[in-house]
Image (cartoon, rainbow, N blue to C red; front, side, top):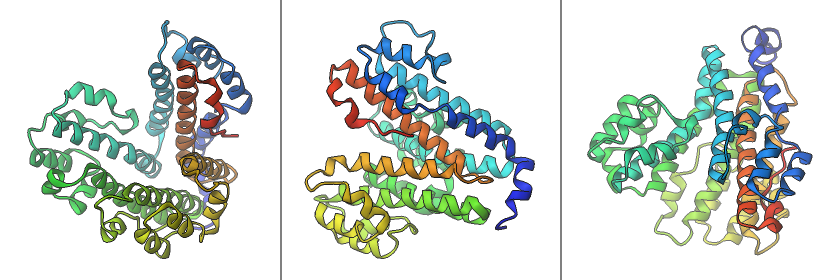
Length: 351
């Protein structure tokens, strides 16, 4: 009900909203990044991060340090925060928090499928899975002898069952390109998540419609960019686009027939929100597009916290923390490879 959340929201969800806003206050600021850019070794990065929310996770790590170790410990901070909130959430918020993690589950299942096809070691695959996308029976997927058995296990044992049963068959797992399967599942997931947020109504529906529309449009853009010069037909490309977003439906029609970056750019610039992004992009600078899109996402997520009494802050916190971890990984890699001159090229500042 529009407007009534101010009366009732705090009864069930006020405590956790306060918690997530507190977590948001612990994100790294510009001075923190300035300190990180001055580091000469990974041990210096660890020393700087021990003064932040990551301190408890890195304090006992012995030298020599590796970038993967720092990233894993920072990711564990996000996972612990998320699981703590999930345990205390009521039914509706818990379902929303689960929806936020389904994207990671899709990535994990696709990783397992790929590993099964190439006969990779089970434990090696599980170690590469994202912790937020883990579920109780994920290990059983890796012991499937063939695609038919794997498909049955996915349908029986995972929260992603509806997306598989409605969009894929076990024959598809054998024949379909892995990335097409990933994007087919993501389309079903985003459509379902948007419908769920619409049913919640109120400020949550308003805030999440904007964030999910951006995610759907970004995926449509990436699908188009990655399918140029491949065997993917225009109709197949269009089937992978979500059924909502600022580009839906006319922008999708134009993207589906685009054959080079300039045509994609022309289609995107017809939407004012994305025209601002592409205006910052000089011609011939397509490689900078990812960073500009991350900056746009960060801006939208930060704006979420300007409103109260809605679930969007949980989704926004997860996205901001993940961006922060990408920043830390970029800085760590630059320091480890003695490429400090490039550090600022990859950092997306949150505040």
